[in-house]
Image (cartoon, rainbow, N blue to C red; front, side):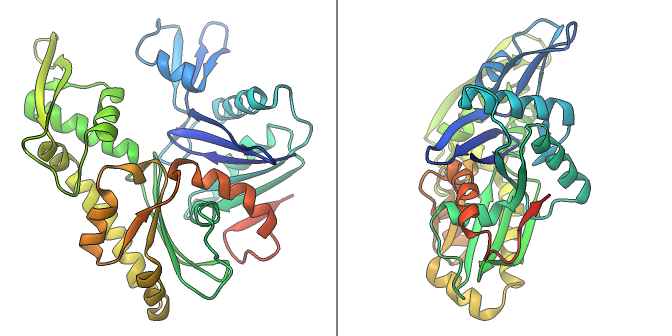
Length: 331
């Protein structure tokens, strides 16, 4: 049994041999502090956030693309794998994707989480490689491919050629950071506190970073920060873009720096092939057109960008003998 896991800050996506993607759940776990038992995981736990009594803790055990709580992450992975397998799996082969610039401490935390499932072989693959494999890019040729993987905690940018990573950078500005920027903007301008889920919905359903309009507006509801009472304001697309502009500038600069570090011949390939956008953040309204205008290189969103990395983790098994960098077996 081969299992591929995209261990994301916002979502955990699991793919299985011959089945493809079998699970896509929020990276959230709820446990009872009195009994120290797991109450719910995934979507069920996500729906509990902000709606539970004090003895129930709803926790996001992954922050900024890495594990912040080892024990809860291990429990979350075990529960989710058993939910799709129907029973505990005996010694599967597991490949987990990690950010391209992960530290040794962060790497060890991921390995401990994978080991807790009882797997017999553990592989780690860097997210950009998995994303390109999941998008069916022929990375085994001497041609440059550039990918920008925008997850919940990190944005990973990399150039790949001949099964290896040529240049890469990672920045801890991604989906969750964008949500917080929207919350801060509404607080500062309208003195209204928004919930995280409300900010996320605005980002997904209302945002247009390429051609925002003052005339396209939406009523936003929250809690007045002074009065403590329910309140609402009218937010335009232009205001929403303003709330995200600094974050977008930082992400754009990261892409530019990777292009600067890439050999000229490979930059020529990228100009021909375009830049691939993957991850949940790739679906931000107008982002591909926005970067095409700023960078002068065609940018396009991968098919089903959120599950692209998870699909690539499984394909990595077939490429394990030729991948030069960013894929390793841990015995």
